[in-house]
Structures are given as C-alpha cells and as structure tokens.
Length: 169
Image (tube, rainbow, N blue to C red):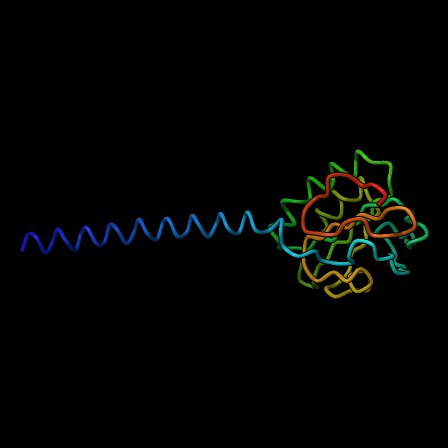
C-alpha cells in the first residue's frame, strides 16, 4: 500500500512539473514569435494611399499634410502589446523631426482618452472606430501596427514592433 501511495504522489508531482514547463514554453513562444509575425498594413515598397481625417484637436490630416518621412502607429484599446509598445512609440516620436501620426482605435464602450492625451504630446492623433477609414486605407487589421514612410510616400517598413529608424529606402 505504501508503494502505491508513493507512486501516485510521484506521478502527481511529475504531472505538475510537466504542466509548469509547458506553460513556460508557451509563454516563451508567444514572446519570441510576436516580432516575427507577418507584417500588418501596407507592405514595404507600396505607396501610401490618399487619406484624409480630422485629428482630435480638430485639424485636418492627410498624406500631403503628414509629409514624408513619417511614422504612423495604430493602437487599439485593451490590447496588451499596444500598451507595451506605446511608450516606445512616444519616445521615438519625441526624438524625431519626421511627421508622426497615431491612430487610436476604440469601440463605443471604450475610453481611450489617456492614450490620446499621451500621444497628442508628440503626434497628430486620430481616434476612430474599429475598421475605420484610416485602418482600411493603411490595410491594418492587427494591433499594434507601426508603419514608416520614406521619400516618395513609399512604405519603408510595416509590422508589430518599433522599427530601428525611419529612413528612406
């Protein structure tokens, strides 16, 4: 009987160790696979389409007014990767003389004002509903998405991480 109890306890401990290792592997895969996820939005080499919107400060914004080079970020409420990338985006925007546009995507029940206020210090900010006109123009369906625009209104990079720098192709 003692051997049976010892065997059951041992099997239980092995199962717990296996579960903890599996959880660790899953977390690591998620963390390491996110930078290599396929790009969202316009692909490098594509031209930025015509777009027009109103910023949260009531000013018009378009491709012509934004200029090139430029940094464009799309952030969604309730998205943990967006919360993680937002400080990096703000830091990059603060340190560049390029045009910066931030699009905050929020549904009717979400309150994005804290993010809008933080981004408005360093960028022109547009707030829109999911699948809004800017998201459609830039072909964005996943968040966060950061797009860099180079000379000739051509996309230099597009993805879920902050690019090294905004440079012309």
